[in-house]
Amino acid sequence: MTSHPLPPVPAAPSGPAAARPAPAAATGSAAGSPAAADLHDLVIDWFDEHARDLPWRRPDAGAWSVMVSEFMLQQTPVSRVLPVHKEWLERWPRPADLAAEPPGEAVRAWGRLGYPRRALRLHAAATAIAHRHDGEVPRDHAELLALPGIGEYTAAAVASFAYGQRHIVLDTNVRRVFARVVSGVQYPPNATTAAERRIAAALLPTEEARAARWAAATMELGALVCGARSPECGVCPVAAHCTWRLSGSPAHDGPPRRGQTYAGTDRQVRGRLLAVLRAAPGPVPRSALDAVWSDAAQRSRALFGLVQDGLVEPLPGERFQLPSR
DNA sequence: CAGACGTGGTA
DNA sequence: TTACCAAGTCT
Image 1: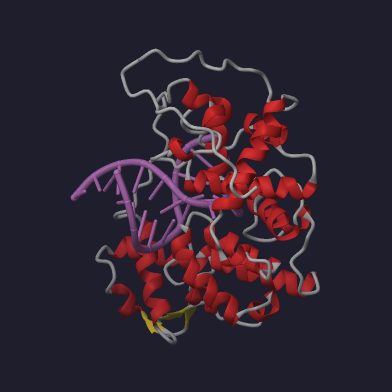
Image 2: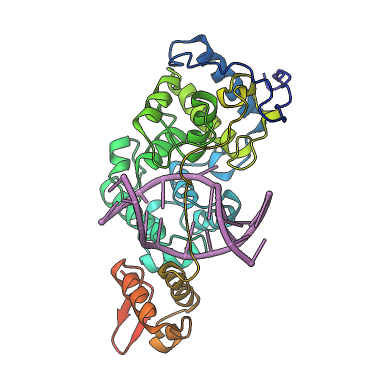
């Protein structure tokens, strides 16, 4: 089954509004349709053959490895997570190992992954696990959701990937795949909608292990084939079933999808400030922090914010360090 | 619900 | 070079 013969995929129409095949008009919920089972086979077979060999997917990877990877992968590419995840698991093999160190060490080891509050939350989550869950990453979705830094997606991802449970795992990759294959649009809405959850629920395989496999497979398909910028329909296992493609791959219409500026923002200043703290072995004087940004007002605002967020600890004598507790 | 929150790669 | 994008969460 690893050599599932992919059906030949006709080239996408390149001309203007060239004769488009009638959009497989809303054939209704894919729920009961036999097409659902077909999709499962096609995507899972593709996954069997093309899934990346990632550390947190190996048989010997425990729930903690999966959980750490999920935190790191929130808004950060796999390629950048790989080396840091390895360091973390070697240094802190279990939640209790991380919990035993000050949160500042988590922030320091987070390096340049970005969004360092995730490091703080992961440390807090590890502490909660050590104290209230006997050191074991909880299996229960609600208990996972109650941990800091774990939201709807991550709770479902850990329960599904680490424990093989049946959950709706809706991340940006899966949402994009469903938007195209099922809804026939290029991109999903900005925020997850009830309609998307309904589609995901209808498509989720009944059998538990298969549901977990499906979750990982659809995510991987979105990451490797059905990319945001360059969908490679030529190698897509479900191109023949893709509503978006069958309707001529219409471009996204509506308001711009995002708008994420960075240069000159408080975020950039925070990043520079924290970089100084991470590089220093101990407390640093305010003068060292003053050097990273010329605008004094913005600088102090950013520093204040970091202290408020618990990412920086102020010390007597105008000195600062990463949080010691 | 919109906006804040880091960083670096790619088109 | 600018702009978008990368396995979200929290307020």
